[in-house]
Length: 155
Image (cartoon, rainbow, N blue to C red; front, side, top):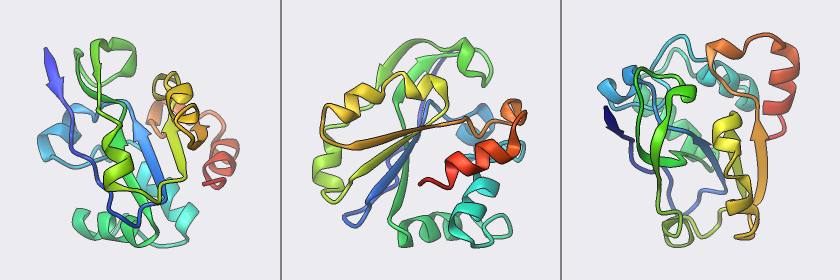
């Protein structure tokens, strides 16, 4: 089944953009990034920002990220995927990243959440952005929690 992702969460002050692949089925149903409670994204961001995010409503979480000049999006605008796992992605269509120069002219760092998103790192580095490929925030990637957190704190 072809799935369509969520829109860009960023503004003119955004300096850091975190890109996943495409939201999980739970996130798509709720129209919220990282809505699956098993995904560790919001817990990792609590540690990065030293702010309690998991107790907030979604909109407050987004506003907190934006206040720290952090935006969210995905590398894929759409793809065919059964379920929510990245390994099931095919027939992917990339988002139009040219909008970043207009929507977020202060963007300097693009962080790619996981290996699948990380495949597109060169697209951003050749466009002049500093890049950072992060270990996936997925619950399937909890083997080295302290090492993963240390890499995320590089944001």
